[in-house]
Image (cartoon, rainbow, N blue to C red; front, side):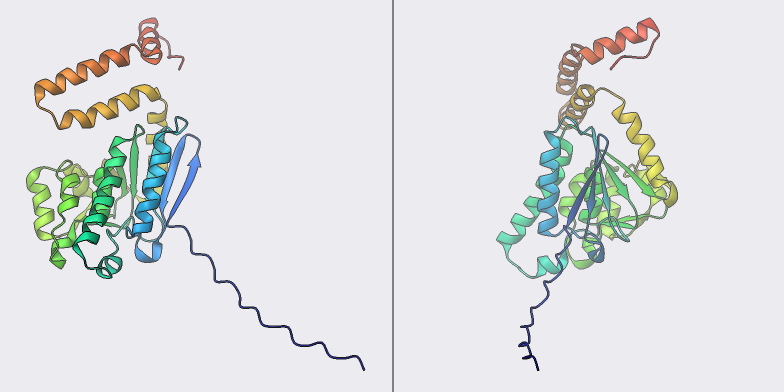
Length: 272
């Protein structure tokens, strides 16, 4: 009888790799960034903020990317900061670093040359609502809901208030901040937080049509115009007009603008 081979040692199976907190999918000249913590309603953990910041930084210097869409996997767009992570390290230094990190990411959206569009469904609350407000444009499903609800937990949404107050009227923003109440998609459109609210099955079609209109324009004009738009908001009227005039003069010297004007005069489509 043949000798019995000794039992092989049991090798523990490797734990499945955790999915990345952010997914990037490029479709043509548009980068789609997906918040990818669906079980946590895409709460903005430190790792997700890091990944989002890195992606935005990479895209900002890539001239082949003409626009960016930020969406959320699972049942919601974004439920704000990760409260479990925040509660695990209750120190002033940690909270200062965390909110500074989030503020840098929100500011990066407006500093980058490409337009950034929020694709919203489900809920967008607290820093998630801040993310919607920080984006240049926002399109949502018609059943999406929005709130800056930190005050319900004893934490006034101070950093979200910066972006919110630059989208809504003061009294509309203060009502959301003081009550923590949700508003629906229709009210979000009326208040200026969202550009358009559509049925869920029309969301991506609506986004594709909007993106097509944006990327058909010259990249240089979009980048210059976006940069000017946010800088002049912080200025007095006279200084804003001065900067706007300088920006337009430089823009007019771009080959794309010269071609666009000539095409208009020639009654033809521009050759960009």
